[in-house]
Picture: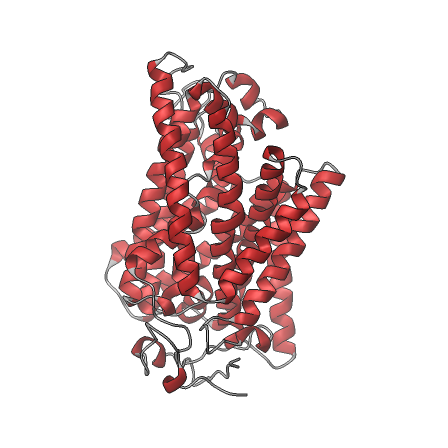
Length: 489
């Protein structure tokens, strides 16, 4: 098995410098190319979160929050800011690929990292499938002459090719696509203002933020468990720690900035859309057709014509099917690469292309898994009439939140317990509050989500037990003298 040496760490421009100090102290040889600027990371995070993400789930969040949709996103932003702080602390300590898998594994212990990685895998495995599913069904509604199955396969194939040729091409594609999303969002907001000026608005301007008749903490926390889907992705930036020019500090700043920007964008668009809901009672009642079409119906009212609804619908399909699912596959491939590099997943997933500096096998495997998940979900949705979109969405949020609990625990253990930090605010108070908020959201999730989620965690514990039984207890390079051996194509 060949190991990529510093002299062959990368080819072409912006190669990773030999003897990368941020990696060598953890026992890793540079393999991925440091070519991403702060702007690249910012765009990556924004496109992963999808600036127009609420278009697709506005109705679900509106119903769950009893109309207080803007409040749901404000509460979600607060929860995520605590989580972003813990990410920033851990990426400074361990500036390597793998995100929460590495942070929990190195911050606490390798077996904890394995379970955290297993939990976040539920998120990263399901997110691309969910995105492809929503995109294919949505664009079929706009272009019924082309089957959702054709769109599905096409989206997966395009993203797999772009990811295969490396992070630089992925970054270029992201920058182009996010511009289109922001243009569509800008058009919607402008038409919303015009619609309000023309008297097409409906309801109280403040009810989206607070309604005393419907308010309860349980309702708000329950709606956050749905709205959280829009926030997933800012943490994906941490997966690119080995491909960032500015290292750990740049990654931490990018996560904080992208979270704030996206949060403000989400709050603004959902508030404007809420002012054009013509039948709030029906939407809160949860009628499936009304919920699924809620944002597009509001857009039509805002413009006084169907063209804006069609524009928003097509933009949602393209955004979820190409740029967002592209970066979701990128994040998953880096997680698989990191765990395989540490021999906690099959070794073939750690193979890196010396030409493109990308984990090629992990990229292709991710594409196949995404196709299988989205294809299965599409079949049950179209042929069996089952709401697989809501099921997958809630499962995605469960996996992410369990992994984030491990992240907060890692901050406390690594900094306070192990290293005696006296920065009580960042290393104790913030992670404790963040963990408490996540637990509150998890408690208010649907029962079937909790049951299915804990089954997944149970399978992870079983897999961990099998590793121990086979004499392959989780170990991390640079911890206790463990080394890695990575294949290079």
